Length: 159
Image 1 (tube, rainbow, N blue to C red):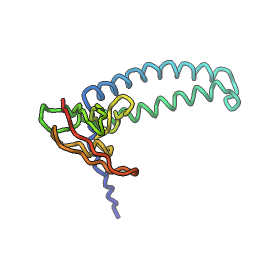
Image 2: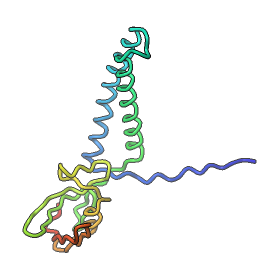
Image 3: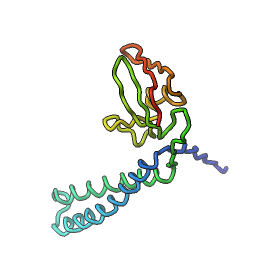
Image 4: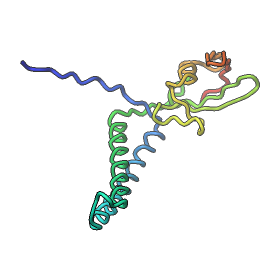
């Protein structure tokens, strides 16, 4: 009896051009670091007993960490797609937005989940706020339900 294995479709991973370039640069940097880490691993093997060799254990862990990140980056590059914000009037991935709530203004860039970094003002399109603003136009109100209640935002600007 023959078994058929179905491989699930992988959903494309959205990136801004800047985010995709950053991932490519990280890959190049890790490939350089890996050469150095392999050198340390080879040196540590020459020291003898590998079970009690802390230098070997640390070198092995470094190579493993680099290899794991390189595998993740390879996956991201294979399935990543660059989404550039068209100059539309609606919020989409790549849009820079300005919101106001209760007299406070905040600015964000809507990005793919892999490049999200709220401390840099980059929020994922899958985050609660990101989902709420996608497709909105300047002047529209955004209602965000959070555990503490409801937050109202006004969309002031899209660029």
